[in-house]
Length: 163
Image (cartoon, rainbow, N blue to C red):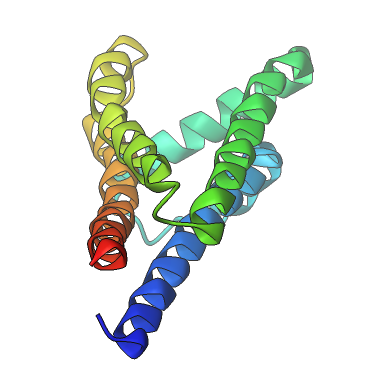
């Protein structure tokens, strides 16, 4: 592999890894102010179908009432946010050396696939509507794609490193 091709491949890996990390960080940061975000969303969802509006308002009222009576319950979403940030930090390894840290992409793909059983098992148990379960699953799909590409590109880099 020529140096220019190798650099282009390394650049693609870097860009997709950073995009994935940014997604994790944004997902994490948005879990902290969940009540204020739901309040904002409740005021602008009128263009969505009634079923979605009803579910969204139900979530907002549940979070608002829970925070009023039991604010410590939101500590769970604080830990969810923290976990997203910690997982994003793990991807610093592949940014430095994608070949040596290709296992991180595998870990990420496994985590994305694990979204599906969690959503389809726990969703119905917790009374989550089917359309929301599909939205949750979309995070697994959209997360898997860049990780899979980085994984494959990293294997290509490794093969050409040894040749």
